[in-house]
Length: 83
Image 1: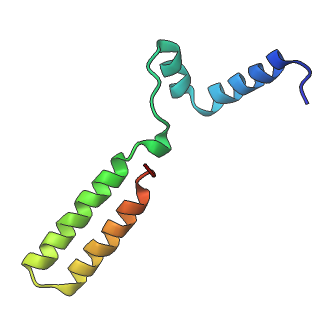
Image 2: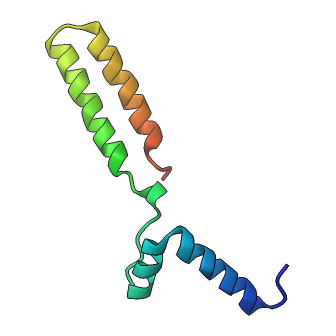
């Protein structure tokens, strides 16, 4: 265990610099970003692909495309962070 509070904070700072240097730079500039886990860009892209599959399945009456679109929509909904 560390002896003083400064040593503990220094260790945390070193670990943060090593793990997420982009966050450290943004924090130093005064513009911190949300953690990557909370940025739902991939979830939105997955949801768009799901709706495209679902629409194709409805336009071309094909049950497999509809099922794939619904499953992909469920996976995309799971990727969104909780409110």
